Image 1 (cartoon, rainbow, N blue to C red):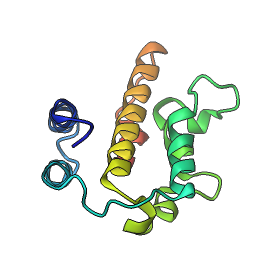
Image 2 (image 1 turned 60 degrees about the vertical axis):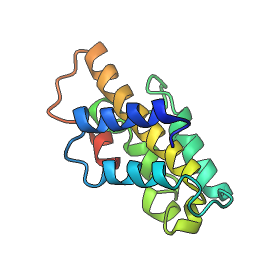
Image 3 (image 1 turned 90 degrees about the horizontal axis):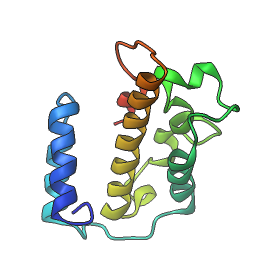
Image 4 (image 1 turned 45 degrees about the vertical axis):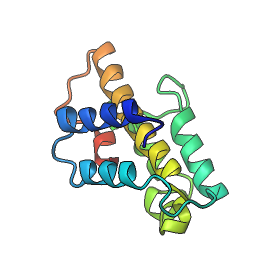
Length: 135
């Protein structure tokens, strides 16, 4: 799964420790571990573009508004420019394969970590982070 057993264990640990209330996360990881080639198809260009946008947006960019930064980091990447998570990932065919799912999970976890670190580095007090909602 997740590019090897070590990553599977890492992802499972992150979910159990940091996101225990994310429903079915461990079940999804277990299912992908047991059947890594389930529905192994091509990843559509729209999904690849969506994933790239999330991965490559810089939280320190001057182009990011205050409403889309700080504890709200992740909102812009997951919802803007006619590409929301719901519109892009509308069906299994929109995803393509478990490899893409692993990429989406890793990117969402990275976005959550960036939000936490950014707020900590800038002494921003937050009761929660919007990026966590996209997991």
